[in-house]
Image (cartoon, rainbow over all chains, first blue to last red; front, side, top):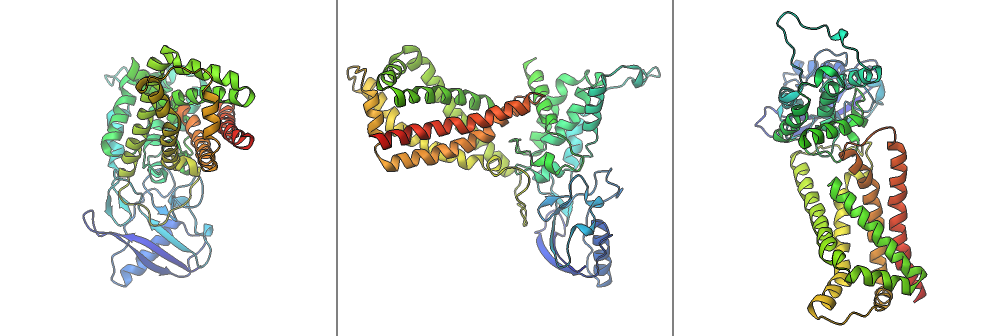
Length: 247
Length: 204
């Protein structure tokens, strides 16, 4: 299939960016979206032009590295997949495809489609961890009985790969779904109770400090999340936050 | 936003209940209005709390909107309508319509009432309320403005009521039932307000 691409090009963080048009021909429907961009980059390099910079790593949908706002949707038109799992068969011959970086004040563009998502790392550092005694007599985690429902919910929350699609989808560029998943995976487990009181407060404070917007419960984040993280996690984060604020 | 919203919703329920008296009995409406207009607890405790709630809700709404707009300095070239409802993404606009309506409502009822009682110190006339209400709703432009405002209020409630529970951390097995109740509330209460305005316009 032949496609017209409209791609955000920005030489560096400080430079002005703009949408640039590219035509790409004979794209196989079996290609992944990132493979299509690889083909485009080969063509650009052959012409002596700068290839389009974009984030990618595992290309299996588990690392959270790929991003891209494709035709106005994070990770493109398919549901519950990352950009690397998106196939060109989801598009038609002659389509025009807009490819933009995830937009947020807290995700500044580094180059072209690559954004700096280290704000997520700093939120994690603020409370997304459990303290474990590593003196040599650490208790086996499996020795602590955990309710199956809670274990399942914690695992569901832990499937968040921190890609930032929730931020990209939200009209407020809020990171509440990400933070709620990280808080939930610990709030539901006994190992997470040691830091429970300060975790929600610290992570929310860091989220605000990074410049993310506030949640207005539109639900756009959960609808676009490639790992289908549920809005119930945001309610749990709000409960944890209220509990720690009142105690 | 959630707590002030819930508080204002409870006020709406009380307000529509009293207004509904006017449809069935002028005397009942006069008695209820006179009680609300002269009871010291309502006048000097609940009324200031209500005013604070209204101002707080609107101010927080504007602060929230400003913060959220600042969090995405560069918008997308290609926008998708997304999977979220239109009203949930445009609460500021329905809120602004409600704010404009409140200004009209204050000019229509609240300011004349405060002037009557606390500036001009006119004597209490227990049966004046029904006549004032009917007189206001004889103007088709005013009735039209009320109808439009309450449609927007209904849309605002449709998202706001449910959203307030999520903000307070309530999302559990009862949530689907609670959402159905809230959807019903967001439809029935504004429709009742519209009915009252249209009823008096048609019948007087």
